[in-house]
Image (cartoon, rainbow, N blue to C red; front, side):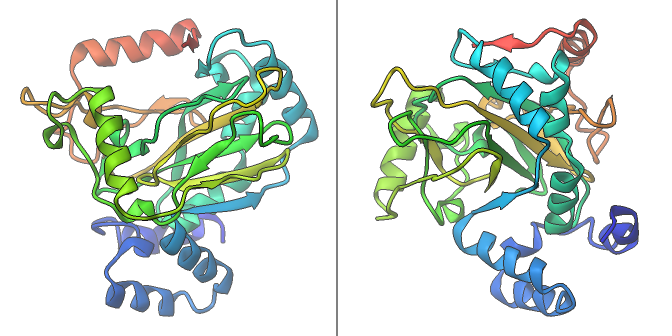
Length: 298
């Protein structure tokens, strides 16, 4: 279904409190029944609701995969954020039409890529969910898509995740003593460990995409073989008709509102509630980053 064909129906649900697959059982079943002419979408929604992730093959261009892999392999830091600013293949992977159309149909709002991360090796990152870094009002209208730029070896520090953990509470600074990242990781590891959810490792081959819900808890496994690369690209997506904010930077002084940049459209996206306007310093900094075409290395 083309995005423009679903626009009218989507706009009628712009006030939805959550994506349809996250609604309470009765509302979810009602919406699934209404989608009976799209069994593929109902199946994807049911799997996403249950597990919090999907693995898909979008048929990415071989040239784009190869060029993005070559760029990523040359990275000498842990990662590069927003390399799409200077690398066209990374940008094409991020705004791939098959990806954005699938996400738009799944979430019933128009998806747009707003950030890329390229990793030459395993991140070995602690357990976290993206909702601590990126969130939305209504909640849940954000997701990540992790693309393997090579076959991922189990000794390379592969992506690990906790199926179904997206149903755990969304943690924010107000829930954390001290409100910093180290405390957050400790809090999350304790919370996830207490659920009994078994950790799994993503078995991903070159060109496959691992899609995760905003609150799915995930991280990077330890690197068993330091000689191995783990070439990968993560693209983060928001959805139109929302307000966007950063819980990590939100505190007693107020909400840290975002104004994400739509990589495909080439423009910043205002919050649905215009009173949720980011500060001037943030807006100028984000525009300078785009105008100067300056990726950020970590």
